[in-house]
Image 1: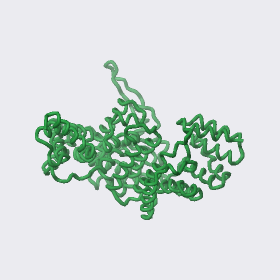
Image 2: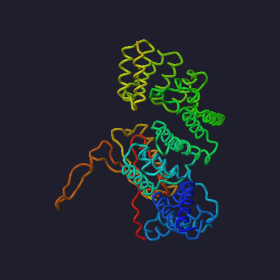
Image 3: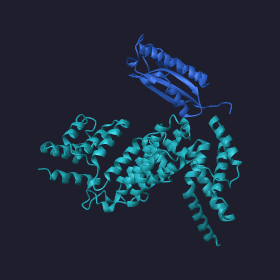
Image 4: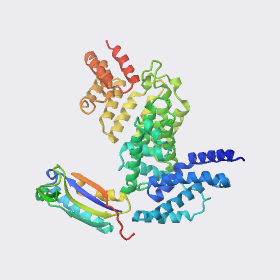
Amino acid sequence: MTAPASAIFVTKALDRVMRADRGRLLAILAAGLRDLALAEEVLQEAAISALVHWGRSGLPAAPAGWLLQVARRRAIDRLRSASRDSARGRALAILAEEEAAPDHQAIPDERLRLIFACCHPALDPKSRVALTLRSVCGLTTAEIARAFLDAEPTMGQRLSRAKAKIAAAGIPFAVPDAEHWPERLDGVLTAIYLIFTTGYLSPPAEARDLCHEALYLIRLVDRLRPEDPEIEGAMAMMLLTSARRRARIGADGATLPPMAQDRSLWDRAQIEEGRAVLARALARRRPGPFQIKAAIADCQMAEPGPDWPQIAALYAALWQHEPTPVVTLNAAVAVAEAGDPARALALTEGLSEALSDFQPYHAARASLLAATGASDEARKAYLRAIALAQSPSDALFLQAALARLP
Amino acid sequence: MQYMLLIYNDPALEPAYGTPDFQAMMAGFFAANERMKADGVLRGGEGLQGTHTATSLRIKAGKVETMDGPFAETREHLGGYYVIDVPDLDAALTYAALIPAAHFGTIEVRPLMDYNPAG
C-alpha cells in the first residue's frame, strides 16, 4: 500500500472502531479512573497514537483492546506525574491491575455504570441529558448544542462543569443497589425520554436524530439489564410514539392529535414491536409509570379509534404514581372524549394556578368549554392557548379549532 | 472520600421542645449517630448554638470589624454538621438521609478538600 492509501485505510478503521466501541471504552476507563474528563482525554490520545502505530505496523488483532491498553498507560503516566491526592492513588492502583490483563480479552460492557453516573440526581437534568448524549452516544458538543438551541461554548461549559462535578463530588460509576434502583432508574429513563421528546419535536433536518439516539439508549439499557418491566415500558412507549412520527403534522402544517392522524402513515413494524415489548412488560405484573404511559399510547392507536374509557382509567392509575396537575389534565381530556365533558370540566377546576402558562391546559379547557356550550369562555381560552403556543404547527391547529366555534 | 453534611433549617419550623415530634427528632439523631459510628464512617460532628449567639468578623483596611449576627441573614440557618468518610457520593447521600433535620430542613453534602500532605 502507498503511504496515503495506508493513512486512509487506518483512519477508516479507527473511525469504525471508535464509532462502534467508543462508549464501551469510555465506560471502562471512566469507571476505573472515576473521572470522565480524564477518560475522554486519554481515549482521544490513544486514538491519535493509533493513527501512527497502525499506519506503521498494521492493524492489531483486537483494535479496541489496543486502544484500551494505550489509554490506560496514558492515564497511569498522567496520574503518576500528578499523584497528589488519595483518589488518584486509588485510580492508579485499579489501573495498574487492569493494565496487566492481556489486551485480546473480551472487553466487559460497563456502559450501564456510565449511564447511571451521567444521569445521577446530583447533576441538573439538562446536564444529565447532555452528558449521556456526549459520552454514551458519542454526539459532539456542537450537535448537542444544536439540539437544545444553545450556543456551542455554553454547552461546552455545561459538559465540563458536569464532568468536573462527577470527579470532585465523588459521583460513583456504579449501578445502584436494589433499595435505590427504582428512583435512580426513573432518573435514567426520564433522561432518555427527554432525549426522545427533544428529537420528536425538532425539525426533521438534524444530522443526528435524537429519537434514534433515545431508542438506541433504551435498547442498550434493556440489553444490559434485561427483564425489567419499567425499562420495557419506556421502550414500548418510545416505539409506539415514534411509529406516529410521520403522521403528527398534517398537510396544512398543523399538529394532529393521534385520533386525527392518517393511520396509513403509521409505522407498522414499530407498532408491532412496541406492542410486543409492552405485552412482555405487563406480563411481569409489576406496573409502573412508564408501562402505564405506553399502554395509553397503545390505546390511542386502537382500531377503529382511541379507547377513551380505557385511557381515562389508565390516567387515573398513572395519577397514583405521579399526582401532578398535567396528569389530571390528561385524565380530564380522556373523560371528555369518553363522553362526559361536564365531569371533565369539573376535574380541571383548581388546575388554573399550577398550569396558567401551560398551553395544553388552555387548549383542553377551550375544547371542554366548547363541548359544554360555553362558547365565549371557550374563545377566550383558545386565544390564551394560541398566545402560548410553542410552534407554528400548534398555533395552526388551535386557530382551526377556534374558527369552528359557533 | 470525606464529606461534610451541613444541616440547614428554619428554627421556626423545627419541632418544639417537649413535643412527641421533638422526641422523635432526638431519637432520630441518636439513631443516625449510632449508625455512622457502627459503620465506622463518622469522623466528627457538632451542633451549633442558635444564630442569636453568632458574631461575625472581617478585616477591612487592616482593621478588625466585628458584627452582631450570622454571616448571612437567611431564614434557614446552619445548625450543625457531620464529617463522614465513605467511598462515594451515593454513600454520603444515604447517611445524609438519616439525619432527621432533612424532614424539615436541608442537608447540603460537600466533599472536603483533599490536601493529602503525606502524598
